[in-house]
Image 1: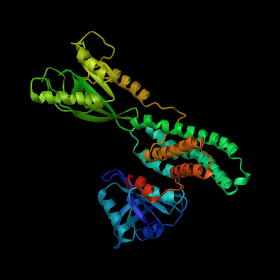
Image 2 (image 1 turned 90 degrees about the vertical axis):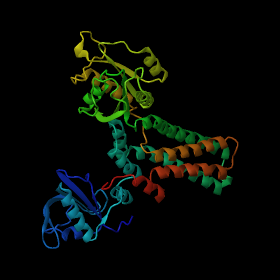
Image 3 (image 1 turned 45 degrees about the vertical axis):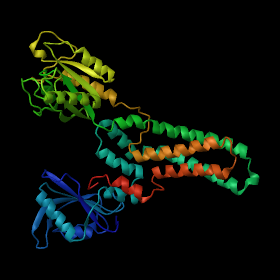
Image 4 (image 1 turned 120 degrees about the horizontal axis):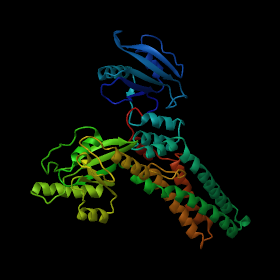
Length: 442
């Protein structure tokens, strides 16, 4: 990455829409923009200016709005302009051609945020949280990413790295002036401080297992006998005719997937083949896939025909053996007088009782401790685990070893790992690994 170059990127999805936004950042932003506009664009920050973009023949390209920022008061810490143009990709490509002609270069994925980090506009943790925020599959992870963007991770780790730095300095001073050191007393004090730091880091890391399961889409498998309305339920939940609905038993022989959002949570729902005494090898294969879907699902909807309301005890036993949460849902309730705990009519799209039940379950599934600090990126967890390992080595060795020159190695290493999490002692391999997963324009 060459920060002396002025870069650009389309910040919106590359297809026709109402508007598009092209971001332009770097030292030559205002020189370049003034070569392709019909009037002067002055570097006045936090202003919006309307201009015509024109080519070298003075031909009008588009009527645009320029959102102007002046260094260092911008996202990247550089001069930055966001060009808001009409949503035709023909227009976008013409504007990109003008920018390239006048010296701008295509930005790399994440380069806008990376420049913001390198220019001191945000910490490494805040920069990493930007991509996690954009890709959040549910409100829980969105909130975690927002907390990191607000600086909560840095605020929690800064005092720890400062304390560790003091301990390292203290041990190094004692190595230089051993005649003034009561090593036994010093180690008792240090041991207490290191133990406290280790406990805090363990509290941070322990929440990652819970968070990890929330990163994947929540999967719901709809199972049941043939012709109970599984495909109709899938279509009702998706509000579209994605699955084939037929009165012929065994119509669904493969897994049909659909995605939908339920109260801010991304859900993947799986319509499976009907479970019955199979009549063909093809149906048998479909039923095997059904049981495979059950294993991967977070929740199972066992759908029953309200006219034949009794569940198959073998299926219930299998679900319990797999330790799967499941709901018994009676479909075609409009055809019977009897009511059940969860009664719906998928064909009539009367599924609110099931939606309410799913909403409640998802709320519990995605609930996290409010005061727990979560690290949303794996690299943060790995570095803190390494720091914990070094501190634990210190605690073990200091019981039988009074040589400060040996013990200080572990404190120094732990200190370095936490500094890397804070982005204060980070190699460019890690930085590039973080930003290469970003989208263009961010």
